[in-house]
Amino acid sequence: MTPFAALHHRPGRPLLLPNAWDHASAVALAAEGYAAIGTTSLGVAAAAGLPDGAAATRAETVRLARRLGRGGFLLSVDAESGFSDDPEEVAALVVELAQAGVVGINLEDGRADGTLVPSAVHAAKIAAVKAAAPELFVNARTDTCWAGRHDPGPETVRRLEAYQQAGADGVFVPGLADPAAIVALVERLAAPLNVLWTPTGPGFAELAALGVARVSLGSLLYRSALAAAVATAAAVGAGGAVGPVPGYAEVQALSMT
Image 1 (cartoon, helix red, strand yellow):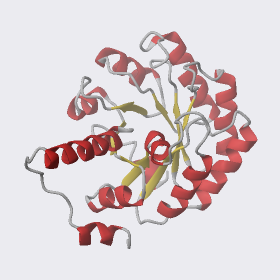
Image 2 (cartoon, one colour; image 1 turned 90 degrees about the horizontal axis):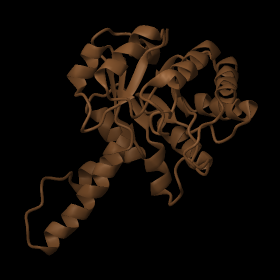
Image 3 (tube, rainbow, N blue to C red; image 1 turned 90 degrees about the vertical axis):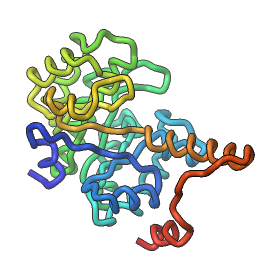
Image 4 (cartoon, rainbow, N blue to C red; image 1 turned 180 degrees about the vertical axis):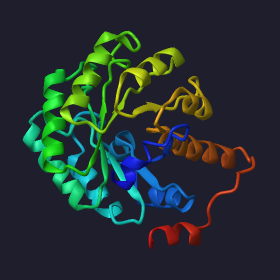
């Protein structure tokens, strides 16, 4: 078991995975003691002026992975759907990421139009990735909840079981928030369950008690940073107070780490 995989097998102690979108955000989070950092595909895409989930950010994703992969922390990359429906192309991408120092990836079965990739296609991608990079942790994500399916429903279970059988090391169901549904999946599946934290869902301690192995923050930090930037500009214009922020030298130091 790799060090990153081991973080998913600590009963009662889920991995809290914050998601960065650039070098400074990743290094700042690592400096706060997070052993593992993820990336957010929305943050990476939006920062480049590109759409998320549309296979438009392969180059940006690889470039960021090369910058962060040797940063002294465990790096997991949100690779959308692998930027292709060809399993061999997805495997080639993952080999690039692994060579850059990445230890985990997210692969999602959702499409930009709200539909889902056929489960057999997604399973084939997972199998190809595991054959090409056996030590890399594959977090197989299904977007059934976001696509309007019943939560968690038989299709969610069917897809997750197929992804397990294809070799996924963990499974991820963003949008899953009902405690009973979470417990049902934890009890049914062998792979560690990852959920996305939401303000209206169970808190971190409750998710731990439910048996969740990994709690991701997704694009939350990026969206929070945008909100803070806009709010700060408005506060200055209104003559209001501005909260404490990192100094110039502190941020400059992040770029040299």
